[in-house]
Length: 111
Image (cartoon, rainbow, N blue to C red):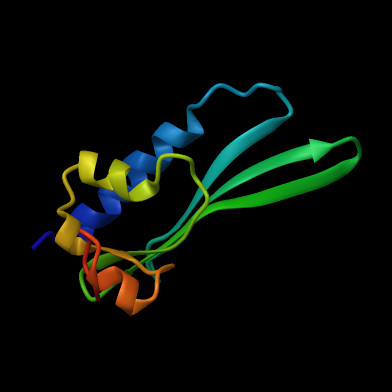
């Protein structure tokens, strides 16, 4: 079982890599917001469309009971696979955007 600090660090590394992605067009960026006090994490796409500020939620994660819960994932490859690549076992990742019945047939944690 990974420690909370290990889970936090894996999320930080994944978000840092997203923030480094090239900005094309240059008026947008990806921003990771990390609330380690409450263990809530968001990855957002922010830009200006003309004079209007625009933001899109790419991912929302929480750490609950020693597991990373992915509650929103609008990324192409999936944040879960990036966390696994960072060394987090699948048994400690819950795809919370799926119903419990669907989670039971998947390869990640159910709860």
